[in-house]
Length: 369
Ligand code: OSB
Ligand code: MG
Image (cartoon, rainbow, N blue to C red; front, side, top):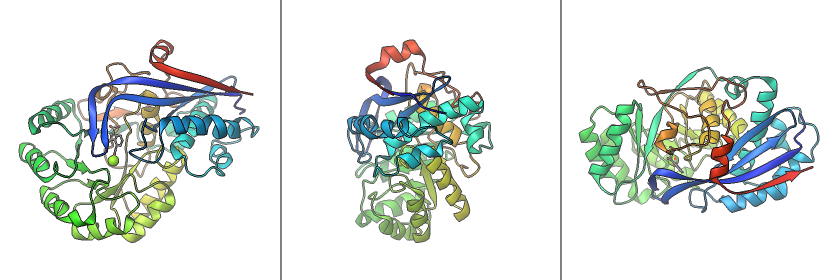
């Protein structure tokens, strides 16, 4: 397969409710969509870099430039693609920029699997046609507001509820949720907002029967995560800290986590995500697929990854309606049993609707050969 053109489209979609984490609040979803045009087939990928480098060191405008200036030319000028793994190989001289790389790889992978007539799930080795779904709940102004939002999700079927925490809004808020919802599988996500000196917060959370504590400490600090894990029974799950299979192996050897949140954007692509899932399976560490408030394009790839054998826990792969009044693609829905269907059509199984895409477009550029 030869990719003849790569188009970048920046889109903006209002969120149904603001999403607040320890690192900031988002009201709109902005994303770069990548379209790989291979003549007979085309494929779509979504870049999860946000407008500001808060979650990681990547940001939207930076990713746009990296793709336009280096990644797209690496793919376009590299000749025939013999396998989707070629994308990462051609881009390997570019340090970092994993979210940008992941988006380009995703577009090529979609085109490739469409040409082969198989779903991405099948091609990656998926073993499930439905996946268990959890939901990530932003920090709300009051305990009542948070509870009301959560009750809606539980009524919709979600199997696990993740609460965002930050210093000052942790033990008390989570304790109130636990009291109101004694049997609900709950987890917390601190997005790296604490230091080991605040371990007593996690020792208190340890008494609340949580499924896991996600990314409590600095993203660079595996050693302190290992020290914290030694002090709590609740499994620590790493998100920001795991950017590669090498990171995952180091975390497992150090005992820095007992669960991994896998996001294809954070680790440089779906194919690296598959390898992390394999390494985790070998180490006996369960994984789940995280999210970055993706539109249907990015969501579709996450859902395909969630069908892999080592991905055994409910992920942050929620229904389109949890994020948007109107998505760009066919909608992802969660059924009453808290599961979602894995698209079985060719490629990622969904496509942006041309009218919706036009309505959401902020800018676009075509890189052609
Ligand atoms: O830490 O998992 C996170 C959203 C944006 C950035 C980081 C995170 C999140 C979420 C939402 O928790 C997951 C989702 O529903 O897409
Ligand atoms: Mg997280």
